[in-house]
Structures are given as C-alpha cells and as structure tokens.
Image 1: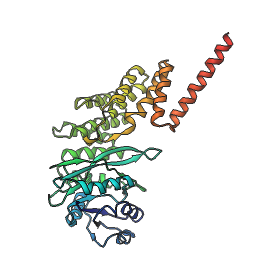
Image 2 (image 1 turned 90 degrees about the vertical axis):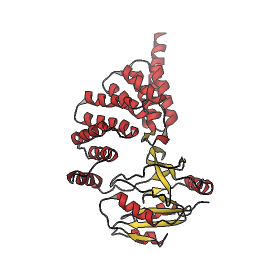
Image 3 (image 1 turned 60 degrees about the vertical axis):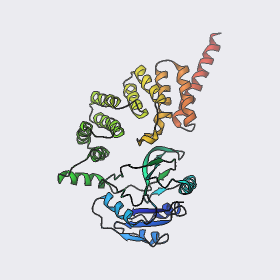
Image 4 (image 1 turned 90 degrees about the horizontal axis):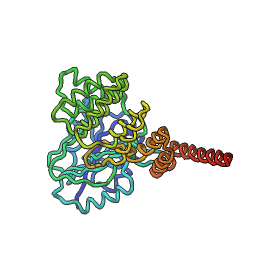
Length: 367
C-alpha cells in the first residue's frame, strides 16, 4: 500500500479547515499545513489534526507556496486540497482502495474537481485536476495564479471526486491584481497565464481589455486545445457585453476549428439564434448539443447541463415558437428526466397541460 502526504496552504480558514480535514484525515498518512499569513484561529484548528504546521511569507505566488508545502511531504505520494474542499464519503472509500491497489510506477493521479452544484447538490461544473503526484519526481506547481502541475510520466485517471464547497468569496481582485502586476513589470505570460488573465478581466467586467487578451491568446500557436475552445466562448461573452454581436458569433464559430463541437459551444450558438428569433438554426445547434461527446478526461471545463437539460428545455421553447407543440412537449419531458424539480420544466408542463385542456374544450364546443 502506498502512503500519502496531504500538503495544504491556508490563510484565514478557521470556518472550513476542520470540515476539510475531517473529510480526509482517515485516508492520508501525513498532514502538512503551510500558513501564508492567517490572523484568525486557522492554526488552532490545524493543531487538532497535525503538529506539522509551518509559516510561509506570502509573495503573490500560489505556486511558490504550494511547492513549499510539497517539499515538506515525506510519504510516497503528495496530495493537495484547498481548505474549502471536501472529500465525500464515497470518494474516501475509493481513495483507500486506490492506496491499496495503485501501481507504484504511477507518477500522477488525475481526479475530478467539482466546483459548482445544482439545486439538488449534484455537480454542475467539474474538470479533472492533477490531485496526487509521486514524491521524489520533482513535480512542482507552475504559475503565480491558477497554478498547475503539467502532467507527465505515467498518468492515471480515477473517478474519485473532490468537491469545492466555498462558504465565502475569496479576496476580491487578488488574482487580477497579480496578473496586472506581472504586466506592469513586463513579466512573460505563457499561454496558460494569458488565458487565465483574460478570464480574470472578464470576471471583473473589463470586457474590452479581456477581449484583447483572449485574441492574443488565440494567436499563440501553443495554446492547449481545450483552453482555445473555451477562450472563443469567453471572447464571445465579452463581445456580447460590448454589443458586438456579429463578432461574438464569429468567435463562437472559430471554436469549431479546433475539434468536434463541444456541448457548451453548441448551446452558446443555439442561444445566439434563439435570442434573435431564428428558431430553426437554434434547433440545429441545440440538437447537436444533445449529441455532443463529453470527455471529462480531456481536462475541459464541463458544464453538465449543456449535455442534457439545457438543450432539451431550449428545444422545447424553439419548437413551441415554431408551432410544433408535440415535439416541444416531448423535449420538455426529456428535460424533466434530467431535472424533474426544475421550475422551467414544471412551468412548461403546466403550460402544455393547460393548452390541452383548452383544445379539448374548443373541440367539445365545436361538436
């Protein structure tokens, strides 16, 4: 059986750190806590689980902090979590099994990271992250913000989900500030950093600047294909925000150059045409979304509802506007299979029930 060091960086996480460590303490062999400047009771919470607590002087570099934590791990493998992460029970069972069965030649274990959830608590947005790496192979994080360990060696994918259960927002503007500081100092942005800089600008509604950064990223020849596809969607969002709708459509269509259409892009294209009353074109793209191939192992940001509920309920609306009420109702029932409690599904169901009653009443009057 392999041994695992959990290596975490924390700051002012007294409210959630215990929840995180309670969910993982029985499945790891060592807990390393690196504090980057807490002024609350974070360290007191950590002491209930480990005596391996260290200080790290924060210098606007997440990779540097995480690497400091990794350097302190002494077990066969190193694992990372954020303080507001939770390892659900079924994942803990799977993780114990993985420790017993993992081939010791394995260098990296990729695991799903669920970062948002629907009204029923089911993962709505998730992607694979490098979660466990072999100690002694010099695996290190890269990037001052949105840090990552580039996959290499023998990589395995395990369906052992970690859930990111935030209870509060992070430091507002911190990531954007770091990127802007890099830009002001003339630091080099690799393609991944450029992509995430664009996303941070967009989140802060600096749409014109974000659009410029996304264009710069898309001009790079070495951008990762999944980031390139997503960048066309984010570029489109920025262009819609500044009322350049035709350019936004062109950006979405550019995303089709890189690979077969993703469900997310298909839904965006469907929405573009539906919003403009071009329902037949919208139908085409929403039907493509229902057929789109979802490959979580690609590492793409997957919006689950784009492969089921969203295109189905949108097709309901489109077919209703086209006068094909039978197909509209069929697609609403399909949407209900994914989300039976959705207010959209329930409202549409009531609409079709009422419509049938009116038709029946009219038919009886005509007899």
